[in-house]
Length: 389
Image (cartoon, rainbow, N blue to C red):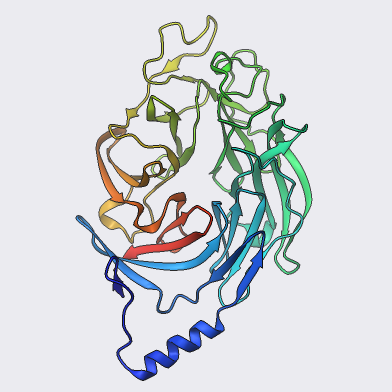
């Protein structure tokens, strides 16, 4: 393996050289949507980085050439789905030519719109249905947040039977602070994180989706244990008062939802979100919650260092034993990953983990293999697998 910053590893003999050249000739490139995807076989693409606590980490670049990727989904047999911001979903199969799926919904891809997230359930091989969140065009320059369920056919490489399970009521001229991240809630449900769309006075309005979190089953029906909020004007309403929740994860220890919220000029903060409550931002005025609104909760943690979260995950699986149960936050500005040291419900430290050596993070997930998977965004995005060496 090659150390980052020291260039590629040199072959030690002619056999290795011939093997490397053969591997290169076997790689297949898919051209489309202005970019090529290269799915590497994994051999000869590994390098190491060093962490002060974990020591050497092996980093495998699994795929490159993705165009502005935003979300990663795991399929059986080391296959992947990657959502791209401009409205495409790439299917990555090891050893085969990658392809973009047909049947993907048309998205409002201007400015801050496009595809937001992809949720592939653990039983995808049996259920064959997945969820997509995106900005849905509703007028020439207007968009609504929508979550659609679709049937995934891996043989024909297409999505069929597309139907919405959530559609924002009001259209707006800009998709700014729309949100759209989804967090799986067990095998059958999910949380949907919605930004306030820049409308601060609607964060606690029970008739507006702005600044809310919703909880649904995958088919769009409601869980039986949902909370009751004032007005109950919105189906599936879980909590309110959020600004721009850009990342979320369930804590394995108790199944509770944690989110990272963000506002320009304020920075990022953390909430542990319980149903039926309101959530405040740093420096919120005493009258932020209107009369008759739900009890409000202050941030659990305000980040000391400026960052803009894009994804988060709790460390599980046993490969990172020293960090088991701790929280990783990926940021795209500045680019890197921060580890939060947890003591029960309290955050007792922030530690830098990865900087921008692997690119600008777009998604971060613990894989079913116990490794950490990092999706790096940008015009030529990449997918990395990280584990202790």
